[in-house]
Amino acid sequence: MKVSAKTKLTLTVRKSIIATAKKYARKSGKSISTLFEEMFQETELNQIKSEPQRAAERLLNNLEASKSVKVLNDKLLLRKHVSRKYA
Image (cartoon, rainbow, N blue to C red; front, top):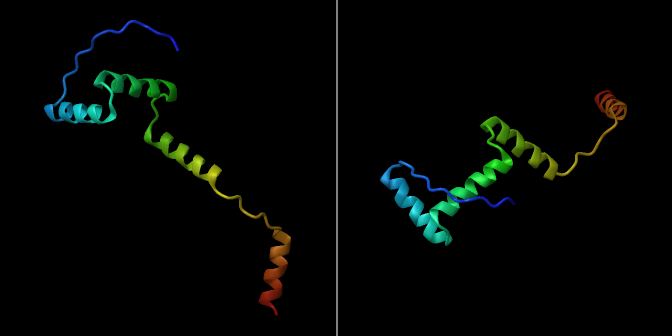
């Protein structure tokens, strides 16, 4: 990981957001600056994705985690169906 000099950043946000951020930082044992930095490091690694991209990614992960489906022979299924239908 590349280490670079830190630079001060001033943000303008609602007071309620500041209070929430401070509570969250205190609970997690991290500074707001560290939380901010970590959030954007993760974003940088994963790139910013749209909601459809995130949904597609979740779907693929669910499909990969699910059990595989038993592959059936179409001709055999058709024969069974016809034999039951006309039995």
